[in-house]
Structure formats: C-alpha cells, structure tokens
Image (cartoon, protein in one colour):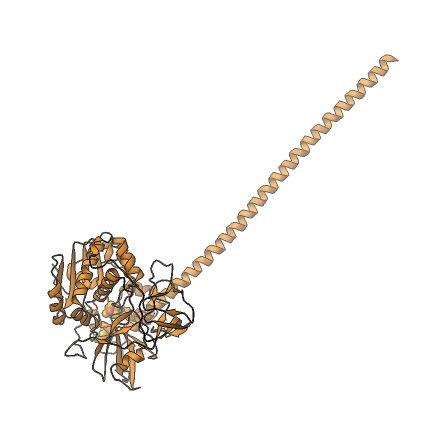
Length: 502
Ligand code: SF4
Ligand code: SF4
C-alpha cells in the first residue's frame, strides 16, 4: 500500500510565506516578445509580417512538427519585429522572437469550443482544441498536452499534480484557490478524453485553503482529492506516481506505459479553457518571490518582460540576482528584459550574496540519503568531476532529475547538481560525436565497398568482353577456314573439269 510519500527528498519550510494567496491581474503590457522556439520540437515559422495588425489569441507562428503547438499573440496590436532576442534560458543565447506593440485594446479573436455540455464532443475534437490552443505542461516541463493525451489510449488513472514543484512557488496553490470549479471541470474533460476510470488530485498538506476550495466543487465519484506530506520534490512525476499508486516507472520508462497520465493542475485549467471556449493560452500565473519583497502571484500575459512583472512588487534595486523558477531548480537570468514564457512559474528575486566557498567532500553520505531517485550522488560527483562519463552512466546519471536536494544538504557546499548537468551535456556531446564518427565510418566503409564492387564489376565485364572477343575470333577463324575450304573445293572442281575436257 502507498503511504502517499516517497523516500529521500528534503523538507524545506517556505522561506517567503504570505498570509493570503491572492492573484494580482498584471496590467496589459505595452509590448510582448514571443519566442518561436518552444521547449520541445522544431522552431515555429511566423505566419505574420512586420507591420501586421494582430488580435489577442491569433495564431502568429506554427510548425508542422506534431510535437509542437502554435504560438498566439498575447495582446492585440502591431507586429514590430521578427528577430533574435535574449530568451530566459541557461544558455543566455538569443533566439528568434516575434515582438508585438500593444494598441491598448486587447481585442480578441472569436473562438468557439465544445461549450459546457462537452460530453457530446468526441475525444479527437477535444485533443485538437487542446493543440490549437497551445496548451503545454505549465509545471515547468513544457511538454505539449495534446501529445500526452493522444498517447493515453490505455489509461486507467489520471493524476492531477497540484503539488507545488518548489518551496516558495505558489502559482498552482493560487490557481486551485481561485479557480476550483474550472480545475474540477478540467479533470472531468480529461476523464472523458482518456477514458480513465479514476482521477486523483494530489495536493500537499500545507495547502488547506486550496484543498477546501476543490472539495467544494468535487462531486464526481471518479475524482478523489489526496493530500501528501509537504516535501520537496513530491511534484516529480515518477515520485508522485510511486507515492500515490505504488507503481514504479522504470528507468527510461514512461507513465503512459503503466496506464497513468499526469497533468499539472494549471495545465488542467488551461485544457478546460481550450475545450470549453477554444481559448488559447495567452497568460499564466507567475509567483514573484525572494528577498526584500512581499511575494505575490500575478496573472501575466505571455511575452511580458521580467522587468515589468518584477515592477509589480515595487522592488527597485540593482542589488538583486534574478532567476526563472524556484530556489532549487531555477535558472539564473542575466537580464530582466527576457520575456515570460509558458513554463515561467516563478521569478526569484534574491539579494546578491557572496558565493560560499566549496570544501572537499568529507564523505558524510548526506547527499546519498536525500536523493529521491535512490542514486548515489557522492559517487556520481567523483566520476563527473573526473569526466568519466561511462562510470557516470553505471551510476544512472540519466535518471537524475536535477532536483538539487543533494547540493542543498551538502555541508561542503559542493554544487553537485551542476556537475551532473555538466556530465549530461558531456555525455550528449560524446553521443553526438560518436554518432558523427559512426556516420563518417559508415560512409567510408560504403565508399570502400563501392570502389571494390566497381573494381570487381569492371574486372568481370572486361573478362566477359575478352571471352566474347576470343569466342568471336574463334568463330571468325572457323568461318574463314570454312570459306577457304569452299574456295579450295571450288577450285579443285574447276581444275578437274578442265582436266576432264582436255
Ligand atoms: S540532483 Fe540528481 S543526484 Fe542529486 S538528489 Fe536530485 S536526483 Fe539525486
Ligand atoms: S553531501 Fe557533500 S560532503 Fe557529504 S558525501 Fe555528499 S558530496 Fe560529500
């Protein structure tokens, strides 16, 4: 039986608690920047040009890649640029984006979905609405929801992930408190699409208001609400499945292989909007938290700059570091000019702190104890430090979810997770290099084979030609001698006739 928890992980009290979890409606931005490269799949191709007027919710870029969703204008206004801009990514690189300047109207496209009586709609129609509305996993993964739903053909249990991914992040908590009806209806839509027998909404036990709000609207026998002990990282999909259903998803395996589908609670609400109204995903709730500010949740249009969103908290100091995501798994951003994306669940505003000096590993075993995946981070660290990728693989490097629990507890302040992230990148590079080497070797071997084959074919052809020539010459010789014989015989006959007549 499951006890609704998992081994390992760390209990971290929210360092920035608030009394009331509200949602602030961020003002309409004067400009948005929308990246064309999404988390997964090919870069979308613009279907608008500079100077075009666009409406809120209008598709402005799309791709044929089945893993991708279209990109929608998040405000109405004019397309002012299609060029490279810095995006919130750990690479700090620029990527192609569409910039729109607002006309202040927020004029929407007309949309029509299945309506509230959605049961008359078939599965594929609903999945198409989800795809066309640009819904992806809003918990941080950014995986397109329609792809997950299309693959869920043999699903027995639906898990709605209402556990916050990191301490201090409150956007899902706020959503459950303020939109419980939409969440529960979204779960019913997912039950209809997947044909699952039951759905479990999983919430951590420190979110009592959210739990009570959902309880008020949850009257469906197939939907249950389950509270889990508040522990980081209970939001990780495989851990959640293990905690709730006692089902182990093996290394490299998927939840769908075991008949389980996980959806983030915010994605579930977005799916509700997509199916009922075909309302595209143009905004999301973002938690802004960290030092020297009172944390808030704000509903923000996609493409709004971090700068504008941080401005809602009245923080006005250069003495801060900013990161996208939470305190454990977030990514530092170099500039606050980067745009809010679908996976931006949190902006962390930290006072600049001196970096703690790293000491030698004292083999205390703390990291091994907290790893929720059951890996051995200490051993992984030694091999990653020595760039011994084969050994890292022996210690299941690729199963590491980069939760940073090990780094968090390390008394020597070793940034273990950075070593693992580096080792993964190195492994990928080696794989790519190996792949390139394999292709080059295959090409070389094929060329050698082709040359040898041509040589043999040519030799065979020459031998055949030579043989044919030989045969022809023999034939000609034979014909020649037969001709000579005939002439000799004719001459002998003439001679005989002459002699007879003499
Ligand atoms: S970062 Fe990786 S190794 Fe460290 S605790 Fe998390 S899963 Fe385990
Ligand atoms: S927690 Fe740090 S010091 Fe302790 S064993 Fe792990 S790496 Fe070494």
